[in-house]
Image (cartoon, rainbow, N blue to C red):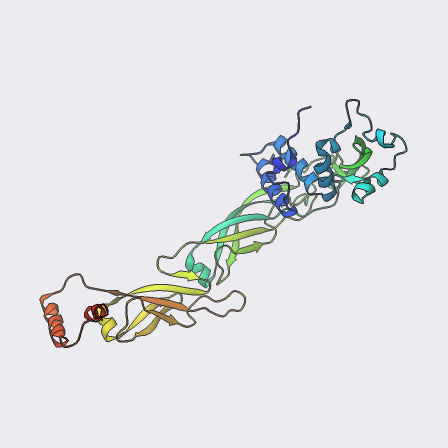
Length: 377
């Protein structure tokens, strides 16, 4: 038998990984290697990932694996002869109380389960990142996004059977969906619960398949789903779309689809929290004399008075012109930064006017002279 890979390496996690990290790694790999994935599907890899997850996500199995490795879960473990590994410690092959053995190590019982749930189970959730225009996240709107989803076959209602008479109780597991098997391990003979190989854990078998879905119980569809972009939603936040995730198991409901918002940057507006920032150009004469201008906001133009003598890079606040908070509805503010524009060329008349201004101001020290005097004291 080929040597198995380390379960931690299979999932790509460290030995100190949390259960959430193990679950996250499993979902990514299971989706990648699932046989239904036409691009990267690999049945052998999928089974390897599934086996690693079954062991490492179960606290008791994980402790056993960390102590004894793969041997703890293989049939015939315990030496070349496949004998009881505890025979030298007073545990015989017959009459072994496995409950006492497991309790002494882990405080648990002897039976281990590796599946076998015949009931319906909800499918996994899915994640989809969608780029959305900046203004749509400020004002809100409905968008349509294309998705691929497995829906219950309307003809058989997810049973996969042509009609009700085509559904029979599985004779192999008597409708339980699982069977019990006994295997030898480091702890002696261990009774395990496994998914019934005949019905795949459903407890039922189908004698005549539904012609519409070929017995799958579901139909793969491509469809456009309407998603409401909430006014005020920010980059990285998610919207849940019920029932548009991965399909359920044994007739269970689909998981949910989480749409993660990726906001396209705006050419002029910049969002910081619930505030909006904007740089505006202003003629130097308007900055000197003062003026009234119409300033763009995310809700439309607002009239703003620029005070006389406004300096370069002055920041003015427009209260309530920011983004409305998702929870409270209270808006942020908009901050406008004044960028004063200096002319690069002047007409003859303009030069004469400035010369006259300079002449009238000659008795006053200009800004640079005032600055240079500081170094002469």
